[in-house]
Length: 298
Image (cartoon, rainbow, N blue to C red; front, top):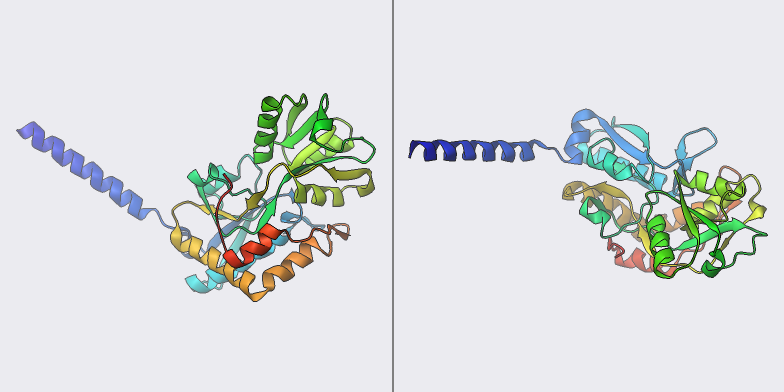
């Protein structure tokens, strides 16, 4: 009987400690209010979402939106002195760094899908794109079927890499798939002739083409393999912070400011070379300006 009581007491004590530990884990708002710092993650070559400008500082469509979210966080936390800390992330480390608290929000080109939603949360979808290919203009490659016997590169850690690997196996397409650390390296492999095609979200391909030394030697080809949403990424199970992020996006979309930002980054001359991506807003994105959905891709 005494052993049973001791066991129950120990069990209750452990349960209380675990409960207190969970309760003591602060949400993002409490974390940044206490520390006075919010950490924004950016990508170095995800043009035009977030990338390094001429002065070596992050710029872009997603980056501007994230800074508007910070403005709202400052108001809600009554911390106008809130400092922004920046952190570069890659396709491989963006989710781990968010989950372990190194970054508080990711402002890039991350696909919102069901698998990732098991680990993180996503805000309202703010772009829709599909996998296509960046090739040399004189390559003769026009479609997926032209890749047989070719080397295809995609950025490691992306959904595009997984989709291409699966398609190659299931449809016996016969290309060699290789991985690169980021979009800039993937593009460079094509320019140098070490890969025949770079498979990635079409808007990122247009961005990397625009930033190349000689954009005219590159072209985006093929029909989109699938359509997927991009969304700003934040920690899971933090509804208070997610509401602030979603409300900021919702207000931008309803006011027309979102469309103005879209025109600035997708339909106007942008840094570093003043090239216009000429990427019209997709039907899916136009619809989501009204629906305001955060629904993931399957």
